[in-house]
Amino acid sequence: MKQRLMRRLSRDDVLRYGSIMFVASIATHILNYLYQVAMGRMLGPEEYGIFGALFAIFYMSSVVSQTLATSTTSFISRLKARGESMGAFISGALRRSGMLGVLISAAVLAGSGTLAEMLRVPEEDVRMLALILLLTFLLPVPWGVLRGMKRFLAVGALNIISAGAKLAIGVVLVWLGYGVTGALASTALGLLLALAAGMVLISPHMTGSSQKFSFTSFYSYSLPVLIAMLCFSVPANLDVVLAKYFFSAREAGLYTSASVLGKISFFFPSVYAVMFPMIAEAHARGERTTEVLLRCLKYALALSGGVVLIYWTFPGVVVAVFGSSYAPALPLLLPYSITMLFFSVSAILLNYHLAIRNMRYVLIFSAFTLLEVVLLLLFNATPLQMVQVMLAVNLALSVCSLIYTLRGRYGQEGA
Image 1 (spheres, rainbow, N blue to C red):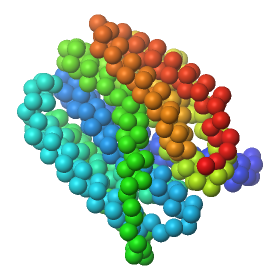
Image 2 (image 1 turned 180 degrees about the vertical axis):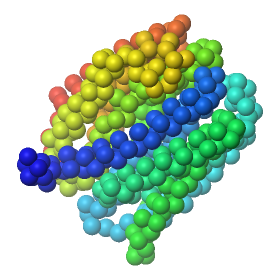
Image 3 (image 1 turned 135 degrees about the vertical axis):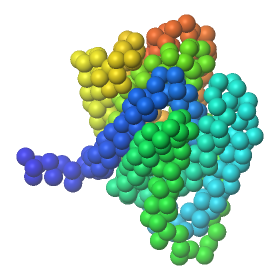
């Protein structure tokens, strides 16, 4: 049995690399969810609603940093496939991401009063959010470099470092009475530690090249990726912000608890993190990519489906995790997790098309994202109605995406 498993791992790159990322993702998500649960219990529904809204803004605002990570991975994969030096590209990417981070953080600080008033949150918490954003614009470069080189063990280690530090520091700071500000500060410190470790790991690849890298192609590739990452971020986070806006503080906190648990069925597989550099490198060499895509979809559906099955079998998990005060969130959990299962399929297909540089799919993904935003703004009478809107849109998106991809010529031949 053990020998058969080892032989399969040696033959199946997706399974081998996926197993590494799966274990690392499990550890990271356990730490992240322990963090969310600890914050939910220690802060209470009202303050947790504030925390959830600001955390969702952090995720949505960091869409540019996700773009940097994805574009960095794509270019590193291509440089690796062609045997070219990476030093000039890495150094240039770090300088540009740092400058962008300073600009974005300054903009958030300048508008902190308006944002705090709109969301009915303390202004000092918005300022802490600005610090987090500054760090998130630097971390994607080492993260993207390591992923492009298929050093998935190192990528997993960075994620675990960030999540572990965030949990430990967050519990201490909130226990000491710093509230939401302390919870956000722990996120900043976790990112700082991961950034330091990432810089150490990529430093050997930042030397040895006297040539300058032209970033013109990087910018032209990053623009549609930016649109894609924005659309990727919105369905996973906008609803929490809207819940804070439309509902009471308690209802928003209950919705956030269902969202945190429901998103496990999306984040749990993390298959697209492994798939992207494999597809990008194979496509750069002119090799077939469809088989890798199908294996990734199979593994993702199995893992996400397992999470949904657990919620269907044990619907009281919200109470077991967050406590009895979160019992009203029970009806939201199962439909929310099914929504995220469909979204995970679409996310894999989005990353696939970005890896093979087929930007036409971004238009399809963007259209459904816009539809979801409009419907959420129109139909938000109850938290359950918002979840139902998301479920319908993401089901339609996943079906259309599968038809578009599998009936098309994508992946039948390389670049």
